[in-house]
Length: 247
Length: 169
Image (tube, rainbow over the protein chains, first blue to last red):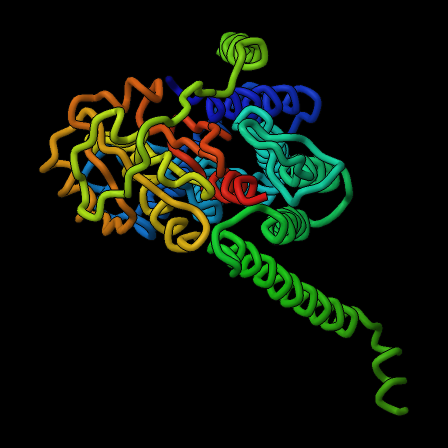
């Protein structure tokens, strides 16, 4: 018997991104090109994410391509995100478009695709979470659980809309996208069932990324502030500068 | 290509929604109570295996059926081993090597450093008795020996943790 859950997730992600590409056109690609490019980016993410998981958990699986292809064996999320972004950067450079702008325009689609993945937990054996009367009963269990995956899907879906619609610099959009996903995953990890009592590796990775985004965002803000002050000083009229000196 | 892909994706989702999902098992352990073998990969028949599970009545049991040639088995085994260590005082974990050779199965366990008990399904009787549909399959038995859950295919940490917590409630 084959597990169809991951296949359904992939199909839903594809449908959501294809639909979004029609609803939310971007300047750097046609709707059909959006799907094609993101398919390549996500495939690269899947491969690198799987490679990272194998290197961390079971290096002997590298000897066997069959073992490597067992996606359910684990795919590291953030290495996959890095790979997907690198592919988008490469595509933008190849098209000779502004890299930051191109990646920022694709970011909402990645968020919506990820949102579809989380929402499709219903097809992957159930949406897990803490026991709660407000929830669903995953396959094979008798406990009603609050569907954390569905909440993450909702949050990330809204985040995609925010990144898409609200006016902001490309850097800010990317930082908000990354930080939002990292925060959502960090919080969700607290509530998801796990073995042992400590945080999982995935939880720690998401917290690290969230802190990185806060740090990077702070640096960007400080530099923008300094540039703004330097620009104000250099554009001040000679009269203003003389007045400042005399005071 | 986009239209063809979209149609294909819709078909996949429709099949997933309409086709009944979830695995189940009618297997109910029976027989004379037996102890879990102390040596790894002791050959057992279907009756002996049933006796081992009966001997665990009063305690939840997780049974994982695997084979050394099965790639998803390799991926999930470390997870099961970790769970066996975490829940050692509350849940019994038993592995069943089936459709395999004892030497290959032994090498597999050594390579992965698996500590929880495993038996060898010499005549494939255990596999037939539990109604195995694919490798790997993990069965969750409650304290009374009833089948609480069946997971066909590799198990994720979330699923395993949720299933174990469900067993203990």
